[in-house]
Image: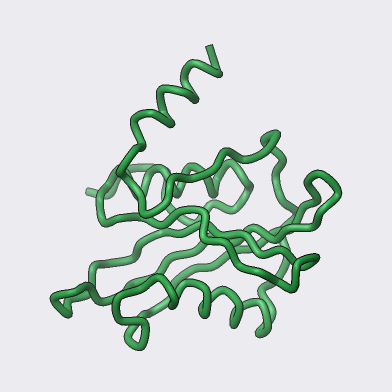
Length: 142
């Protein structure tokens, strides 16, 4: 039943986020870590590369945690960013989930970013909660 729900969720997500979230390998949660200035720089630089107008982005809450998968260290980061869109207006806080690989020169991988839709927020928020980094309220905004 659980696998069926996961497959249906994955199928319904097509086109809902900038990059489809990858499943959390083995459901392994992360051990929370503080975000150092160096880590923050890697995160903001990685996110800025994906924004239309990075100079005017505003980062909100960011949480990070580390884990080892298949013998490799990775840092999972969840956060929000409010950036200007093509028309110059701010789109509101959009969640993101990313991975940083310290063993590979601290390379940055954006796993998923909200696309402005409520469903996009839910998908990324759920992935972050699964990893143990709850950045968004689980309930809908009214």
